[in-house]
Length: 128
Image (cartoon, rainbow, N blue to C red; front, side, top):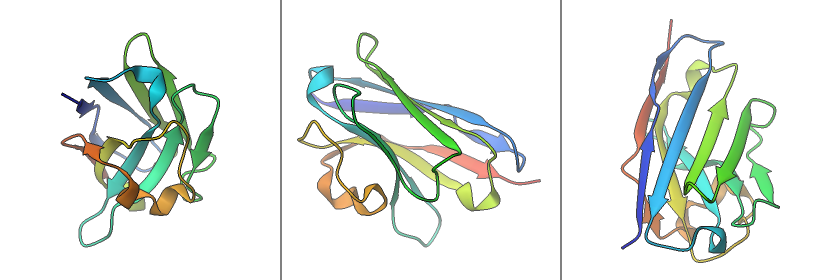
């Protein structure tokens, strides 16, 4: 059974940082890309960053480029999203997701429909 569990969200001031974790189980780690998404109230789910199963391919959405770093440890079945210089518009529920492919779907920001398995999400609030 495929499972993805996010953690690490919370309240942070503008300019601050967060480290989000996605721990997954139920499949061979390096066979599938993992992507982080976020969803703000009243908005569509938006892709933030993707890392391929082999970690050779990394893609960022324009809104996150330069502020986000995605990494992966297949031995620990974990994908990390480090977000720096957070802005109020980064507020939302952050999800990790898995599809049926090893590489990243482009554009990352609009790839949500391609993913089949989702975690329950972790809330991030950026506010002073």
